[in-house]
Image (cartoon, rainbow, N blue to C red; front, side, top):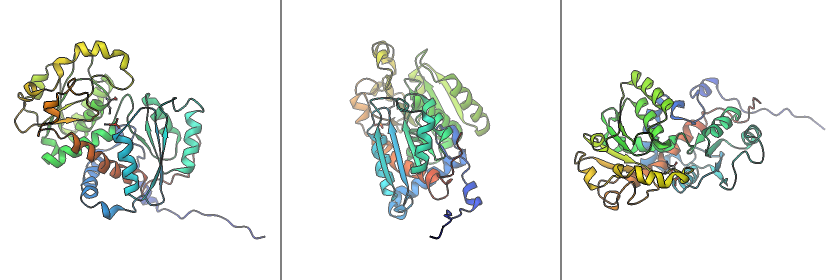
Length: 335
Ligand code: CP
Ligand code: NVA
């Protein structure tokens, strides 16, 4: 019986080095030029999806979600299929990802089978730990600290509507949560302008804010923090809000429902913004809490453009991280 030596086809080192970061745990994992690259590629993917039908051919993507999802799940699944890849969705809402075995062991299993791992988790550290151990790209599909895919889709939506993102002013009102953190970091990376109005005690995570301000020092971004929602929307091109109670904070619902009403986006508040200003929301919306029906259903609302763009932008992210130019997933370096 003859013996065979199996060898993997070589990938040119220059091609591997083209994308030195392989994860999207935080917006901080991307450089400004990579974010710009995602915007450009998303434009092409949206205009001519038929040109990219085999971009993920032969690639399998695993998704584990500890929290419910409509948009993120469906846009990843449709996006992967549209690029010729395949996907497994694991409903992890009944128990935490590490309930049955360690994150390290899960990571070292997954890297043998899949080309990327998409995680929606309670603890941000869960995404960080899997990314630390897995020799396959890990994408944060929402953690308690960040929602990077959302923010990239939102800035792509603003790019489509207004062009030069350095000139765009986004006003974010409400809770200092995961969505805000990723918007803040993206605005900082892009050299854009962001104003944030939150109630006292519900502001952005201080470490994220410090990092965003540091990035802004280099990129020329403008970050303004305040508590007055009317002042925040003055001169804004877009007014953004999110749920007052994020997933995992349900026990605080009563207390928050007493504190947040001044931050409701209604016609009166939109009247303080320029007439061209659009309304944005990551969805799901809690109608007539953080936003009135009149605003979310108005012609100023671009919430479904944002939802559509989740798919185009996530396709671009997958191509950047898991396409043929990314690192080979089978070279395990057991940590
Ligand atoms: N915006 C967003 O992430 O929606 P889902 O929770 O439905 O995925
Ligand atoms: N901040 C919200 C976003 C939902 C997409 C949450 O974490 O529940």
